[in-house]
Image (tube, rainbow, N blue to C red; front, side, top):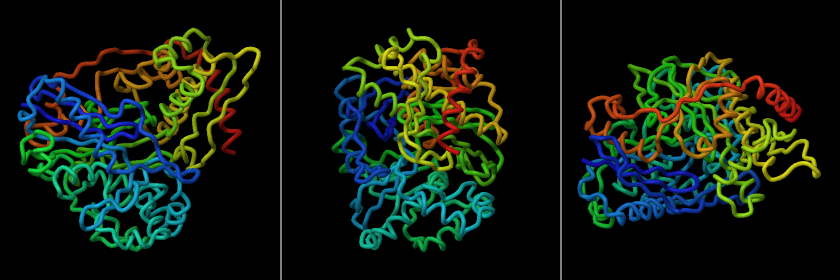
Length: 492
């Protein structure tokens, strides 16, 4: 019995075919190979065309099929992971009305900040567990204010994963987790927030049917099944934002467990059973994949917009065609502290952990007679690790006490240098796993379709690949403190 996982990322779409019994990935692919661009019509804006995600998903699956290592007719359920916070709008014919305003778009910051003040800080934090900030609801309010002709045509609003499920099934649904990541959800009443909906003047009919994450979100329609070579009627049994899904794929489901990822963006994601919030909304609380009103599981999320995106930027700018592995080797040969270079990796939109400031990326202390590409590469990876440390300290101030962090051996965690800098600047050991968002989504589909009797059963075969403890904290700490001085000078 096989499971199909689809991961709608910012840079590409990944798919995985997982054997339900062994929990092993037997085929995977991504499309495109080169990173998909983000459209930025104005500074601080970030958009992508949802129809391109759908095209990329079909092409990635076709690549998997061409490998000839599985029978597509053996696939019995589909799971979807997706980039969080994006806004997708469709009309009654299920046609996209405009590009998706994606997670790193900053245009709605002032709208969300005004809503925070007018709805009341106490209400927003006690009920929504967040400021409306720059999240999906505020992005929808921007469309309502600035594109009324498009707003008038809206039939349903969706998160990116809801859109892909719609393309597969022709039915539209969402989840509590998705509504919470859009800051639509009232955790005190476990319903849509009447106060927020009324404040923004949103029509409740625009919100899709709300279902559990692990449940049937439609069945594959006959036309799409024929195009893909799959059985008609198999369920889409799981939909989750990429960070809750990453936590699921690392079997991070219970209070006290913590996951991290360093892809296009960087995230630390910890689980709590309490309705906790950060008074300044620098970190955010959402419903986790296994949240229910009866058994609350909250994901406390720290996001850094510019992690892998900055590593890619410096590679493209200064890497002269070398691979990431070669870049990592060059950086590793330089000394801790990159001979004085300090990098603030905040050039990918407004940063929530910096109170939604848009401070940009910064290089400090460059010496034209000393520094080489290798120093730049090291400075960037150390700067990203220090941004994680800064954010983790914020989470610690809100009661999070990590003893180990689980991460997939992917993206920046493939770099020995980055892993070293991360572990020694945070002071927390890291367990690395062979994990992938699309494989996690496939296993989520197994949970949602009841192939597994319990979520933990889906990960019974998963073992860590590597355990790394801090050993150089005394060398990294003064470098971090110097980095922190530079950051504080920019956010005063």
